[in-house]
Length: 190
Image 1 (cartoon, rainbow, N blue to C red):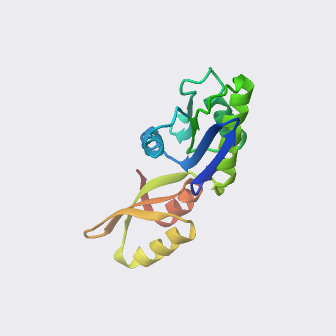
Image 2 (cartoon, one colour):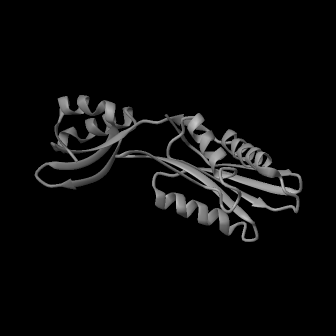
């Protein structure tokens, strides 16, 4: 699985209709909605905003699409097929259409929406998805530097810390590295 690490945009005109696409990273349906609302706000006179997204959740992959009033399966579905084909998760692609007065037909619409979405995805950078896990640590003060360096090495981070008799931390680290940390520290899953 892969994720987007930046936002991509693309624009093309096909038979007088203007298509503008945005590919963006999102980790929740709320973020998807916010991204699509912001995109639509930049194009208040557009006729359609078709979209598709795929999110990794605790229950599996959630994916949805909308044809935004275009004939069924001609706008959002080609975009979703691109996300699936590239094995992208936590990604949303929206495609705006300004109608140019000429009907494109169902095949033409699918190619136009899918093609513009492809250009936006091509304009982004991707990375391999790394599943992160939150872990609660209780460490001695003299271990703080060691824990910080170990987290940095595995691209983890400290989410929260409390200084008492010991240091209580909530850290985020790749799920594959949790066992290594369990062997070195007193850990409880969070």
